[in-house]
Image (cartoon, rainbow, N blue to C red):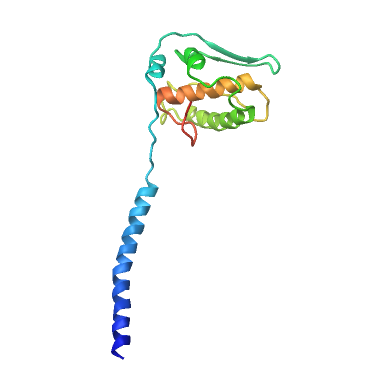
Length: 164
């Protein structure tokens, strides 16, 4: 009989110790997992120099097949595109189309909220229809402009890091 009482006492004591410990561990886990962690972009010195460039050479994006055209006038973008960005053919067209669709939606939402987002960064909406085939070149340069823009101005246009 004494053995059973001692055993029940140990079980009760174990529960009293384990419950607060379990609660504390759960609380700590929740606090760390719920916090938003912003990853820091690794921007090279060469890339920073291109961001600071004042050379304004417009990049014209057009597809002769589809008759669509985009003109980007952003200092340093053309040099960045030629020297830092992944070469044409690196990404598949479907990858570019999917990423562009996500980033265009975010971009256009920010254009419509000038009190919340810098209206000097988000000036005009982009009329991009994911159901239209704009061709590889248009999608490639638009995607790379979004990457350049995010890296230069420390913005996020999607749930992924703007990597090169």
